[in-house]
Length: 199
Image (cartoon, one colour):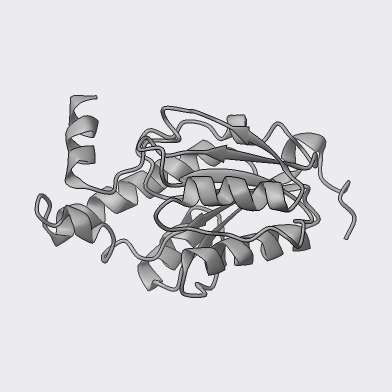
């Protein structure tokens, strides 16, 4: 697939894994009931898709309500392989098949997301751009060049930020750490709701 068939400004794709709205954020159950958690999850996902702009975007999910929402938002829909690592690999395969030069993988729980521009400026350069979460632990957003070096592996879960940096370096990629207060703020635990409400 030719990698110059898209204008330079759109030679990246964005992929957003969303397990389900209704089942998401169980760690917030002490503060929010099921309906409130569902509404919050959908609002945050809307905010992330708003930040994508006009670039190709896909949502990874098997949940019917998420797939319907994604299609209504004009996103492609990919099947959920069952894990975040699997969703990221599906993201890479989908974006690579589009002939694009870079893929941005961004989580759906970023209520302050405004733009993904800090992650897209590297084009096809062998650079991983990565946003650590506000706890300096997780990986709410990253971008990778395509085709992806075979030595790189995804490592979502506790400590994923440092694990992804180490994996990129082993695969021969340079690493650009993007400390972005908006893209780095994900809502995972009740304390995050307090921060969000104060803001």
